[in-house]
Amino acid sequence: MKKSRKLLLILAIVLSVFITSCGSKKPTAYDGKWVAMSAESMGVSIAIKNVFEGDCFFVIDGSNKAKFTIGKETGTGTWEEKDNKIIFELDGEKLEGTKKGDAIIIDNALNSGIKLTFVKEGSIKNAPDSIKNIVGNWNSIDVSVGIEPAKTSVEGLNDISQALSINFKDDFTADITLMGKSLGTAKWAIADGLIPIEIQGYKIIFNVKEDKKGVALITKGDEFYEMNCIKK
Image (cartoon, rainbow, N blue to C red; front, side, top):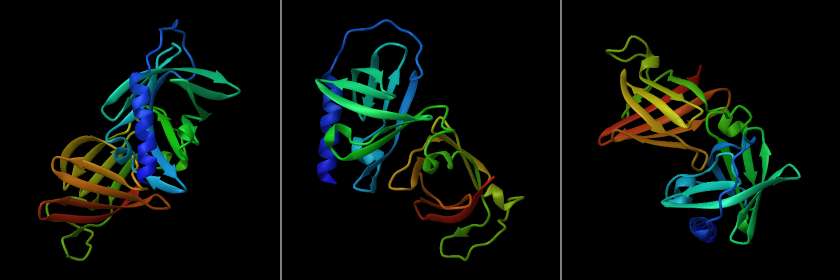
């Protein structure tokens, strides 16, 4: 794991120092913001934010340049499309990705053995199922407070679905309501197969199950909730 992180750190440094000349702008199928949503090494998922110590994305705006943000580092590289692949030129090194719907898959980032999945912001209908199936409205169907057994009604709420509502959106933000009160909007991403969210002091771990079911673990100080949820 440490070796993989070191290799990806090298990628971040290369991107931050490699500056290329501007090309003429012309709309392309790759235009937009592409966000790293998952990373895998030897079949094991790695949390994006742990690998890059922050967000990881690149932007293509009609030129032959791709502007990267990796954690706290920013930089610019060139790209081209060849044989149905997108090829980035990074300080003499090539990074090759395959476009699959609204996702770009890089199977072996700089020979690190790490597979990266980038998803185009605002349109993930053709993204991998592990990501695509998350987008939508999720509501609680029961709630357990502390060590209490799960129950399907909460005093002060008209319906158990008001205990937790998370609307995962395709721009990788989520609108969250807890116990009938809006917590606002937070960013979301997949980390080790889970979706960790921090908002207004709450730490939420959302685990997506099969058949549009999920489980949310929520903590803040002495507060602890466990809620089974369904996607509507």
